[in-house]
Structure formats: C-alpha cells, structure tokens
Image (cartoon, rainbow, N blue to C red):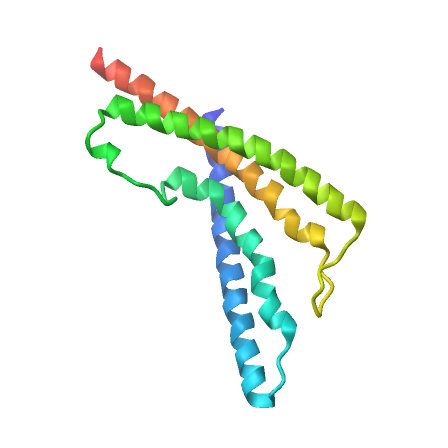
Length: 169
C-alpha cells in the first residue's frame, strides 16, 4: 500500500509544484501588467490587482502535503539535537497523525463551504465573474492532498520505527 501511495504522491507532488510555479508566475505577471497599463495609459484594470488574492488559496492549500513530507514547513528544530532517533520517529508519527486528523476535519469543512457557495451561486465582485465556490474549492482539494501525504508520512515513519527496532535486535 505504501508503494502505491508513494507513486500517487510523487505524481501529485510534481503536478502541484508545476501548478504552484504557474500560479506565482500569473500573480507576478498580473501585478506587472497592472503597473504597466497604469503607467502607459493612466488607467488600471482592477482584475489585474484582484487576481493574486484569488489565486492565493490555490497556491497555499495544495502545497500543504508536499511541504509536510519534505519537512519544509516553518518549524523549530531544537529538539532534534537532543532527542534519540526513536524519539524523533515517534515525534514525526505524532505530527503525521495530527496532520491527518486536521486534514480530515478541514477537508469536510471545505466541502461544506464549497457546496454552500456553489448552491448560492454567488460571484466575486471583480471585473471578471469568478464564482466564489471556485476559490473555496482549494480548501478541500488542499486538505485531501494533505491527507494523502500525511498518510504517506505516517506509514514511512512506522516502517522507520520497525527498521530501527530490527537493527537494535
């Protein structure tokens, strides 16, 4: 099961990082075009300025899982210098369980919010019509990805714990 999950998550990781790169490029391009059009013509287009905040949720939430597994979240690493290898593994297992539980809770809440805004049919007040539910869809998408990656992390750390015990024997 771990190998199938690893294969899925490796593909997801590549796609997510590719999409994140495109989103950052679109954000920079939109802000640059906003400044350029305002400088050249004296008239600015609001959607250039409003696009980056709309895309932010699609940048942040899908990256939660890949960053967790890679250990690139903001963290304080003072414990790693004083803990034994077994304690480090147990701490990472605990972190994976917390991330998994949070992912489940927030994925459910994100689905509820997305369905609510989809049913309401509301649109953001931008120059271009963007349904509000589209922005909220980033929440369950990101937390579903977090569930997959935290499950991978949990299974890998359980395997690491077993390997550590077998080496000790």
